[in-house]
Length: 353
Image 1 (cartoon, rainbow, N blue to C red):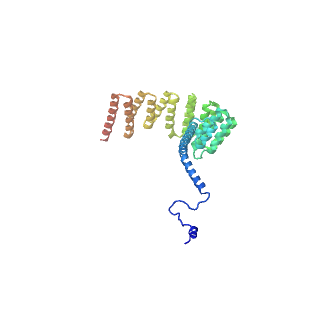
Image 2 (cartoon, one colour; image 1 turned 60 degrees about the vertical axis):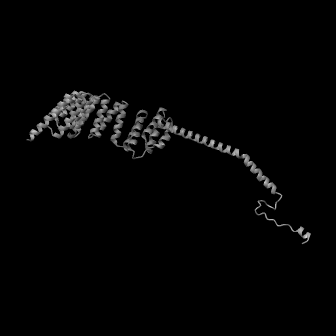
Image 3 (spheres, helix red, strand yellow; image 1 turned 180 degrees about the vertical axis):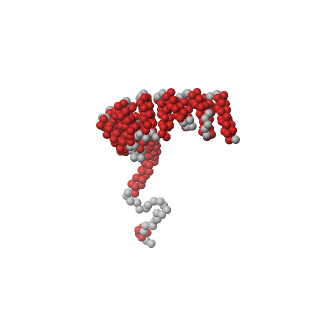
């Protein structure tokens, strides 16, 4: 082979396994230099990256802390609103979450009234009546009562009558009349009250509860004579079978709001005519004990247990007497009750022979 040909023939070299490129371009070194610089920069920036990560974690903790503080503040505001709402916005939030609560609606009305915004209070009541569920009858009745109170205090005769008529159409008539009766009593409107009592006694002449409520109102107004007249009217209208119950319940009202002596007289009158009415004896004794007239209660039970009544009734009376002596008496008075019980049992056994 000639030198020329040897010179022209280039050696065939492979780059396999050597880790470098043989065919380099003008950009080769620039490329490698850039990569080298980037690598150097990465090494230089590593502390900065760690610092940034540390800052990010600190920032995240701070943001989390701020969010917790914000939520706590929101909770405190909600608690404050629930316990002590101050303005219409607070109440709007409350009624939105508790639409059937007459308590909140009525407080909302009172908030307007404190600001002398009667029309807004009236509108709030009507809004409540339109929102409260129809099944929540007591809640609606509470709103009607509040609205009637509002009209009685701040409205006109015409607005009150209009509200009353609407309330009567929307509720049980008896309940509305009784609510209005209490409203008139609280505002000391005696003329309107007496007119309404006459109407109630005529409209609900068979209702023992109606008579008792009217009598109670008169007692509260320190008009015992008118209250006792209600009792006479009740006895003239109610069936005879209801008379004992009427007198007994009236006597309890008389005892608490009228004259305890008059109440005692009423019970004695009933028990003279109906000595076997254990329920009346029990009411009478309970009334005397509640009034701290223990000796009178003891005397009443002694009289009750000397009667010839059925064993079941006598057992009830002796048990009541024993309880009284156990709480208010002495060991000797307890022994006396036991002796009376034994004498009664002996008498029963003797009669059976």
